[in-house]
Each structure stands twice: as structure tokens, then as C-alpha cells.
Length: 224
Image (cartoon, rainbow, N blue to C red; front, side):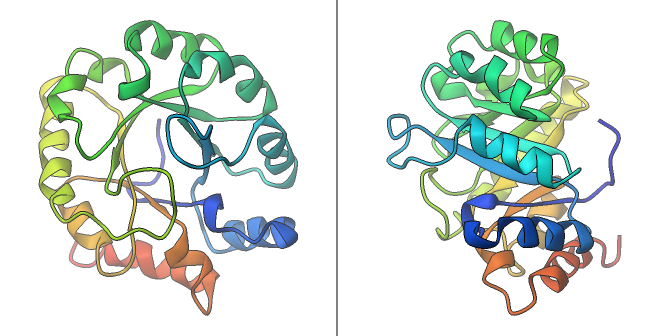
């Protein structure tokens, strides 16, 4: 996946859906690289959010890649419909996908990039056997289910260990972080080896969301 060395992916979990078209346009004009779409089923995580119809609507409103994070049990049931709806990346939880190698392969067969995500309590080492097959590896820096949570500080060391794992296995996967990403946390994550950052509340609650995207990116480029 050849993209900028720093990617900012605004999370639609924090978007004002009454102004969806305007807010997606704002993300584009602000230089966002991806849009992050959290799909929750109310089973794997204690919340219920978007389905294929929302992805289809977003696809019609923007040309930005749609980074779809499946926080669901039996994620393979959603692959076909979500890729058809316009998902660019499908990321599934290691904790909900006991047949990771097969499921990653199926996502790629459908024409989407394939990612795997791990919760704060899941060891990075559990992904060693599939790391080289991934397009994206996502580290949750909060426990998934709700937006606006505080960043778990130990995530920085976990990101560092994940970067080492990707290097050791020859993986070219993007290393994404999701949860509590804001001006006071993004730089440490970038220095630890992350290159892709999901930010929802930090962007959409800012006085100038468009400028906030640029501010977050700039914090990853100072002295780079």
C-alpha cells in the first residue's frame, strides 16, 4: 500500500450524520488520507453502529479510501457486502477470527486490502504467523466500543514491539493506532513506529476540524 508516510484517518464514529456530506468534504479538503468506519454489532463490543448502507452512502460522497474496522463476531459474514458497498480496507479482530489466514486471504480475493486488529489485552506476538500477509495491522489504544476514551499509555511500548515484529517478518503492513489519538498522544505513537492514525473526537470536536487534521500530521513530521 503506497501512501504518505503519515496517514490521518478521521473516524466517522464522531461525525455529525446530519451534516455527513459537508463533514466528509471537510475531511477531504483538510488533507485526510483515509476515512475510518467503525462497524459494531452490539455483541463483540457493547455498542451498535454502521452497516453496509452507511458505507455505500459514504462511498458515493467521497473518493477517500474507506478504512472499515469490523468489531463483530463472525466477520466473514460481512466481507462480500461491505466490499461491494465500497470498503477499501477491511480490518478484522484477531479475537473474533480464529481462522485469520483464511479470512485475510478472502478479503484480498474480494479486492480489498486486509487488516487485523488486536485489543489492548491481546499480545502482539499472536500475529507473528500472519504478519507478512497483512496490508494493515491496527493496535487498539483503548478498549473498543465507544469513542472519546482515554489513551492507554502502555500502548506506546506495544506499538514499538509491533513495529519490530513487522520488520522481523518482512511485513509491509501499515501500522495503525486507534483510540485516544490527539495532539498529546500522536507524536509518541509515531516515534514508536506507527504511520496511520485514527482520530475521531480530536478532529470533529475541534473548533476547526480541517486545521486539526493538519496539526496532527505536523506533529509527526517535526524533526523527521
